[in-house]
Amino acid sequence: METTNKNTSILLVDDEADILEILEFNLENEGYRIDTANSAEEAVKKLKPEHQLILLDVMMGGISGFKMADQLRKSGNNVPIIFLTAKDTENDMLTGFSIGGDDYISKPFSIKEVIARVKSVLKRSEFQIMQNKNNIINIDTLEIDMNLKTVKVDGEIIDLTKTEFNILTLLVQNMGSTFTRSDILERAWKNDGIVLERTVDVHIARLRKKIGRYGDLIVNRTGYGYNFNL
Image 1 (cartoon, rainbow, N blue to C red):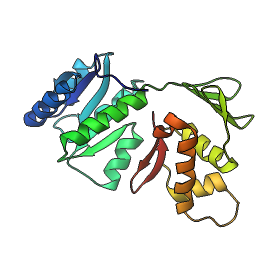
Image 2 (image 1 turned 45 degrees about the vertical axis):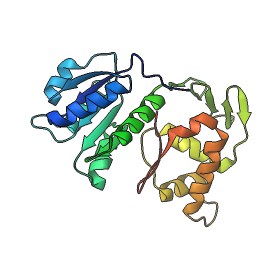
Image 3 (image 1 turned 180 degrees about the vertical axis):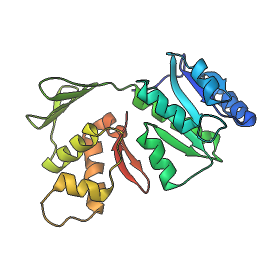
Image 4 (image 1 turned 120 degrees about the horizontal axis):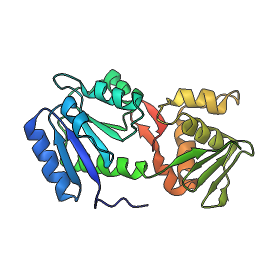
């Protein structure tokens, strides 16, 4: 599933004019429609339903980027957000993800990195998730039947092991939450004997391959763990 840039609207929020200018110029060259704001207060006024992504600076005067994101999520606005910040600590990253951020880019950054992250987040946001009363989860054409313990892609049953199914459902049912390898071992393997943490990587690699394009939604946050992120 390819994301096209035409008619994709992005809101850039940063109190540093030179960064706004650089981002606006390069993202417009990629074909995106760009709006800019110099503060969270201005961004809230400019934010429109057609905006499909926000690049949001964390450290700004007045309302911070984290505070703005938190307010958006509490109001039910789930527009994808990529945080931009000069701070690069574990606590800051976890804060960003915990309040509903979709990605986190540390300053200084390369434009190529920003463009790649933008494309990745926009691609993930195309997927829609639904769970019906029969305990079936649908993410576009990925279907997870929690009762029958089956997974289908494009209508075809995918042969997953019990552990692969446990990992997939753990990540999908806790979408956006990041699980360390030890978390996954404890919850997906349960009491199945002694298993090394690196075994998690092997099982997730196999799972990604089996579910095809949906494997891209299983994201490895380096140093933190795995999550399933639309």
